[in-house]
Length: 465
Image (cartoon, rainbow, N blue to C red; front, side):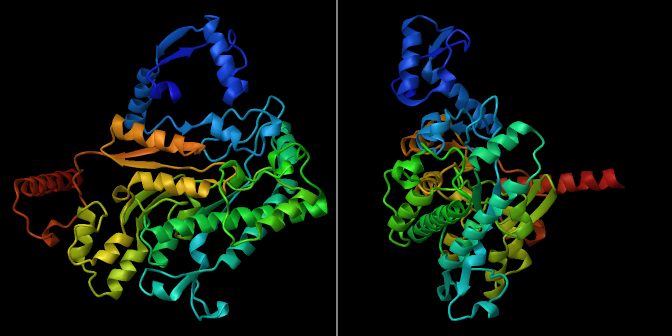
């Protein structure tokens, strides 16, 4: 990244002729790399920027390769004492040590955040099973005490899974038993913001994002320490950063809030240690969030009406919160539905919808991706593994992508990008739109869309009959 910034050269080495680079990071990597350059061991020397732009080209065309930063992954890892972390898992949220003798294992669970939004003054036993929509949000609050309780239960349960799980290979069993990493994630963060009447990119949502992950990390630490008090710390605890009093916020130079008693948990850990080397790893939740009716992990809604295909099947997803709010306001109609579909699931151009709702129901394409990255940074100091961070960019180009990558890198993220999601410059024809219900528009572009829609419908009819 530094050589790209300075428009310098990048040397490509054969691992067998320049050994050790994969096994080090930070200053040690830089010193060894420079040494091999001075010794003339490079197989090829290229412009760092030319290589960079080839990476960006591939990302724009295919959505990959993923971007992780080796120095950040290792510098901010509680597994530093085990050795160099060389890669993540497929989804880029699990960053664990592996070796020829050990296969890293991820033991995961996600917490459904919308279930912690409560109605003020309503006893828990009388509370509705699930809230919907933003109407009534002024009478709601987020129950951090319940989130703390559930985080503790999840931590205990994942530890039990490690103990009783079936391991198909010995190297996986050995790694899991020695280091006992777990990964607690979330789903429905966007739903939570909607239920509380917060636009995704509002200061209130950004603060809640930090508070939620601070709560999860704190109470995962507390539960892990409680288990360690009974069963002992994990086998390779000695020498890890936490054993030296260094927690994840310390690695980011962040001072936690006073919501929870951080001096107390530090004191507890110093006495009994931790049962788990790693605790928090927000994963994609692609299938489980569909099952529970939440939006994926910590992502904004990609659309208010869309189709979703995952391993377990294909789902048609409608933003139930928007439907509820528009129905309650008495403005939901077939015409409005068609206009939302026609505008690719966006409500920003629909005059019947008030501005405060438009702000709440922005899609990811209407939210600055710098804000998405900044929110990832805000919660990053409470994530001791990493996070599956997708980037959505309308009409992506190398300039916009370079700016975003360097922003993520400079802020210290471990995962800079999972997938890059892009949209075509030209909209596809929408077969599900009933054009008779659209508002009349006589512009040439609109007439062309209408003509081709009717033409293709006629062709499909002839093919079926």
